Length: 335
Ligand SMILES: NC(=O)c1ccc[n+]([C@@H]2O[C@H](COP(=O)([O-])OP(=O)(O)OC[C@H]3O[C@@H](n4cnc5c(N)ncnc54)[C@H](OP(=O)(O)O)[C@@H]3O)[C@@H](O)[C@H]2O)c1
Image (cartoon, protein in one colour):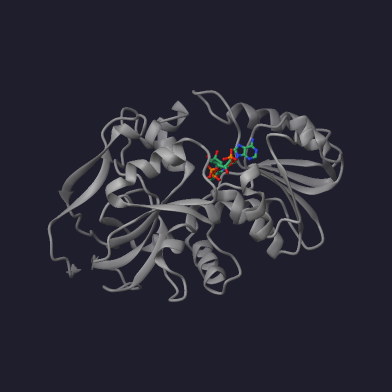
């Protein structure tokens, strides 16, 4: 193992039970050491995603079968990380101490250091600052996969529902980048932002029911809010169009599963209109592509605000409240 660590302990926001943000505590623990094929990163910034909140609360309950039945197996939230490699385990060929990186990890970003398999990280381009970099992987990767699944292409008309959140702000940009005409449903205060990101038309979701938008007029609908009736959304598609379900409101036990099953039934006999649930995967190659686009200024992270690590719980509470505009980032003190 090769390391340039000078201290042995660190602060990490850690939970030993599922719950609201007060379940997450600032504790001092040993800095992890890298095993084979792993590196340790000194975290520079970590953005919060809806996924962190689902895991923090252990809801929907079905999620506990994958993340830990009694408590989260990874106790520290923060899946999106940018930082500097400070220790390298055996067998790591592509990264060295001092490299600036970003990536979507299994968690651990709300800490001064995090250990991860090296292959989850990509290099951060110099033109991309660490705060913006940390806001990219999960939300940007989800947006990319949603746009891809929707088959979004130039000159199509696309509706993004839930355009003002973390995933939505990237979805609007990536669809516009493909040359689509983007319509968006978002929070009223975020309409200007969403238009600046590339939406041709925006609507306040509280006063504009999706049912009020024209029928049979969209080539793709990317639903990141998950509340509008599926039958109505399907009727808004042109023949051959695709409805992508990124999110789905549901019960405390099974979450979006009910909506996904209904989507399967509605897809039958839908006149060539498809309904496709998205299960986004962590893809470092997408993170690298997103980082390159951001470094070239072709997409940007819309960052609502940052918090210092000492106040990470406030960042979690803010995202937990469900009204994030773009992204929320926890920023570490400079080394
Ligand atoms: N399928 C997958 O693989 C996958 C991957 C990642 C995320 N997701 C899911 O995607 C969802 C969105 O994640 P996110 O990080 O983007 O969330 P987020 O940042 O918390 O989204 C909040 C934003 O959505 C707006 N909003 C809330 N309800 C809305 C509605 N009914 N219509 C339109 N806009 C609405 C809010 O506006 P106001 O503040 O004005 O209310 C706020 O700006 C989550 O449910 C998450 O679990 C799924």
